[in-house]
Length: 340
Image 1 (tube, rainbow, N blue to C red):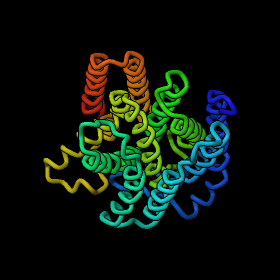
Image 2 (image 1 turned 45 degrees about the vertical axis):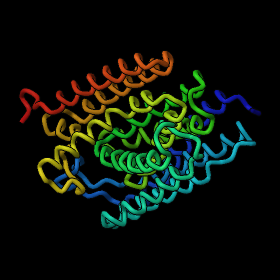
Image 3 (image 1 turned 180 degrees about the vertical axis):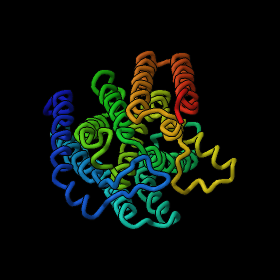
Image 4 (image 1 turned 30 degrees about the vertical axis):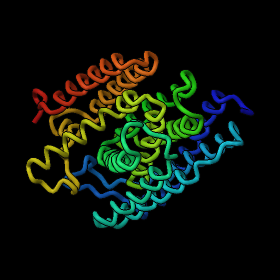
């Protein structure tokens, strides 16, 4: 390595934050003119708000991550396919922000982007070597497609994606820098994405002045999902599950509940636990504050899992994480006393 990884990682966080903030400021008038999100019955906002700041987040992430990878490890191959898939899925999101794409074509394009990343993994690189590689890849494709969409589903409240993405990405950077549990490339991508999300955060602070839009939430899901996959491929499956466990629980339980009621689960709705919390009398800042605290706890449990590196520690961490999530979801589902 030519330059120390910790130095470049910290620089990537700072530069991505500055680049994203500056880019967001510059494009906001354009977004206000061409990409307004109008309130409807399923919205959490009350006034028309520009969307599409994900353009700045993804541009800053890819530019800074690409430069950082080239600086730290010049001999390493640039993850061109991942970057290309990220741009493709961002383009799908951008079009959908302006003129909604029908469900099946949208899913097909998303599957193309996710599949391009999954099916080009080295054949000898598996999470479960005892499972046939084709079956594992198919399962990863389904899981990746679900993860990309659940990040999009959960991006329905000011700061929600910020309080989810920042703890996950900073934990991933820690795994790469302190424990050697993550390769260089995903460590630097996580660093750049965490910085970009920090740069976006002031503009999305409740009440938000701008939203990510699908152009941001979909590729963010792809990048985080790929980094988590790299962590799992290093043998840290429990940690890779713990970090996004709140999003996984809220979205999956909501999907199952809607399916059991035979509701059109593919349509926009206000059934997620975090959305029900605002309907039950919680202020937006209270909801995202509680989710942020929970995500910090999940990150601590993931760190413990990596440090102890045992099946027992993994099981205990997962049980503790699931219990904490269950408490918060039950809290969100109850109407606050005095709330109308």
